[in-house]
Image (cartoon, rainbow, N blue to C red):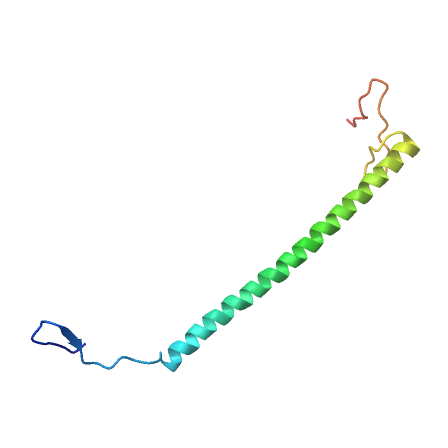
Length: 100
């Protein structure tokens, strides 16, 4: 920067100050801010999906609880093998069946 000293030792800037950034700089700043905004919108969308899925899981867990109560009432146990539907009745000593 071109500067000069006056009698009072005051420094005066002789270069005119810019009023605006360059078009390229403006374009770059706008692109970065637009990308930030896009990411924030995407995060909001994901959070909404997360909330909905969490609520759905709670509903499904309630259904499982109801089914377990029904199994307990119908079969005396809710211990069911979910792969093949086998009911695992408790042994007389209170232990569940164990397959060797």
